Amino acid sequence: MSRLLTAFILLCVTVCPDQQPADMSKCPFAIDPAKIAVDPESKQALPLGWGYTEIGKPVFVDFEVCDKAGYLLEVTVDPKYAATVDVAAGKLTVSYIPTVIGVEYITVSVKNKPVEGQQPATRTGTFALAVLPRNQAPTIGCGVLRK
Image (tube, rainbow, N blue to C red; front, side, top):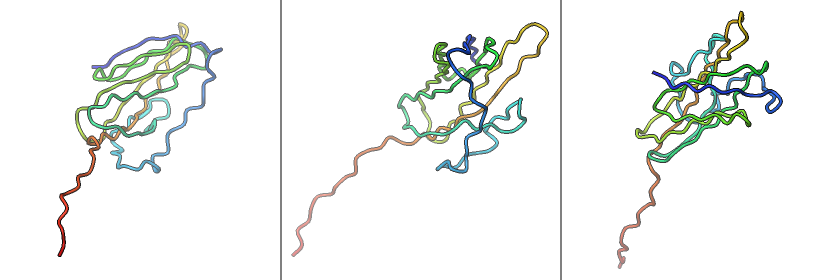
């Protein structure tokens, strides 16, 4: 099951960047390549970046979304995430409160709705989020006098 959002992104507001995968060789934690979604357009895995958070802490991941022709967009994310689209900024925000330590893979799909007679085009990619235990202050044991 997935959550579907539909938004109209105006070209005059956002200049669409060329689609580029994130360089996951620079990711400082282990990534399971099988969990990175294959983009239907390029037919290759499309990593969208990575980040860290702590368990139980709300996290917000922003993605730029736009269509060069200015077509209506459908945005799909897993329903366990909350997702909003800021039409004026051309930005999708996915929010989530992680409950399990490990790597969370947030997959996002964006499909355009072209004019009648044209086939829609879709981009799908994955953001890797390392969920860490909450950081706690270290402890200091009681001092012992040496003689």
